[in-house]
Length: 185
Image 1 (spheres, one colour):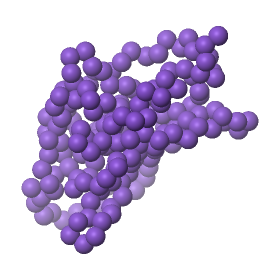
Image 2 (spheres, helix red, strand yellow; image 1 turned 45 degrees about the vertical axis):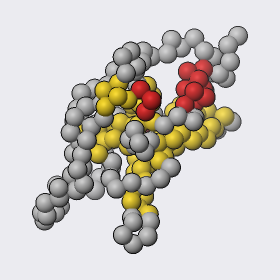
Image 3 (cartoon, rainbow, N blue to C red; image 1 turned 180 degrees about the horizontal axis):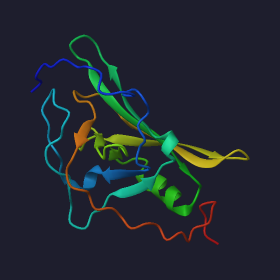
């Protein structure tokens, strides 16, 4: 429940960019058995993510300066909502990133994005309204990377939530045995 408060300037430099944790956590919604709850007007989430037995999230590295979480407000009067979106670039073109893209392009995902300054994490997407992956590779003489865009298919009533719950288990790092073009020798 929202309680009205006045909102002064938070601090000196409050509008400066916030450094993001370069490790983004992506959870397959099919693995979620329970997720944090919240009430309208309160962006703090209550509770933890619980995954199926043996399930793990994926931790993916993002070039820190490319991490752009956000949302868009859309809809008609009395029906406005928030569509969450997360963009970032993963450098390289190794087998692990190509396998991830192929396996997850049609799956619903939840993203946890961390803030380096204060350790908070925000949640983008939910089990019932997940993010979906879009990818724009750059594989040319200027760069080798994958720009990933995760976005909800529809708006809902909530801003990205602030998560203070337990860490979710993450998969082990790729072994690095794939070559740079995503193919094995």
